[in-house]
Image (cartoon, rainbow, N blue to C red):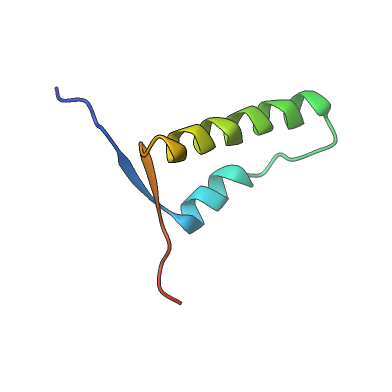
Length: 56
């Protein structure tokens, strides 16, 4: 099976992932979410995740 070199993701989907239900005042949860958002940022910067901005 070939490996995927890059993924296209819509802005709305990316926001849904970043703001999924469950945000609370728990610092462990906050740290986990920040780490996940940082992973998305790394993928975007490495051109492994391309964000699609739909026309307005």
